[in-house]
Length: 620
Image 1 (spheres, one colour):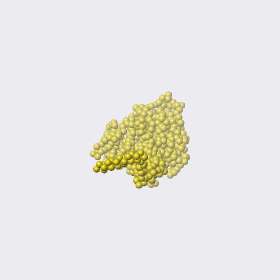
Image 2 (cartoon, rainbow, N blue to C red):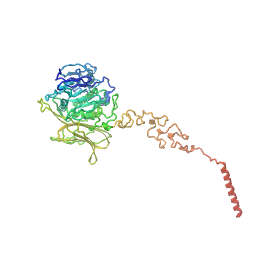
Image 3 (cartoon, rainbow, N blue to C red):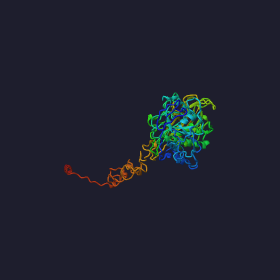
Image 4 (cartoon, one colour):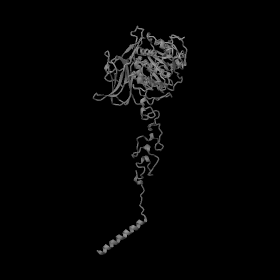
């Protein structure tokens, strides 16, 4: 007999179940225990630590987290070396009604990447809740097939889901689209209403699953090698299309490892935002009584992570690199992302830099005439309704350096939920507002012209990634595509100078091999190419030097060959084929040799001239 109040989770595959109303089957993502060569370096953590120095500690210690695991054995091994106390002992709390601390290798590996002392970005996370996936859906989200029950409040700010789920199903095995949609709406409501950030992994391989990556307000994570599902699953009129689902990737061998790496980065940003309340212009309080600054809002954290992501990577591991971001039209999403990589690979240093540049309001909300070229804003009321503004301008001014401008606009889908704080009935009415993000150019007369705009009517992020020019005046603009409405959004932006990883004079996005300083150019110290085979490298002879001003550069003509034998080596000789240049005194004097027949002709001419002279003498 089936227990209707508890869903069953399968490990490593699908098993048929026939429970009504809402039994699920789950595919557990396997996670590698291999420690990557330098994961922290690849995702910008090492650079961030070096940037901050020893005086700034951002380690996640102020943030409580939640780990949700598939299977009946869902608990990490709390005796694992990475969970033993470094500064603060870690406390693990089993939140399942069915108290069972059965351990799994998967949960332990995920925990290492989420809050481990060595593998994570937030080693001092110490308050860790654990849920099975079944219990999270039924006990935390209260998705029991009824329209009653409000998702539980929680002081835990970041939740990691390294599992994927199929549709809810009926007893005959048919998909239960209605209850699947209800689970996603409850999750989207919880994120929007309480700012409890949910980081979810997509499926390894290309087959998409509806739970949980089809929700709007989650942060969906894939792998840098792009071997993962990248679309949402159409479910009903609200979750209606196969839209791009990947927001970020991480250089891990499995999605189960990539998701907690991103979740750890989210914890770090929340910790930093809490330590620096002056970075935010306002705050709110959720149902659990947690103070949430604008820098810590769910939309803001998502925008910070996306705007900070790396679109070109040079990773230390063999788990993939990004080297062709949006280059192929078929890879380009309508909201400015790449189908495979979303916004790109996690770079927590870049995200932190955007966060620490502080909140900067739009001009229409009373902000400065000009914002910095890096920053963020959370606008709680936008869309033209109830006195909210319907245009938001962020004037970047004249750009001081060539580089990439990155901007991510994020807003949450809206689900009605309970009508009051005391109500137990949950309403599933849902809407997704439509916003547009534009980049404008402003000339010296103040005239604006459109550079690019991002319009996607099925997603809830719009993104710009564009090379911009020094000395040009730019402005970001947010506008509604529908309305009027009154809804919040977060915008994060950053101008990043072009990088040259191998220091060969070619910027990374133009370099045929970003790791090889001798490609495409050879005029760097490590390069040994010797075009003229004279024993000196092209670099040693210089890219622009022409010692003899003959139009041939030194690296093109030898300094050990004298082609015309005039004593001057070719790279010092203005004409390698003329022995009289550059010193005519070195040329031999050549006396012409006359062949014999010319002597006879010359003699006859002299004889004729002599006779002519004598004849003229006699006549005179």
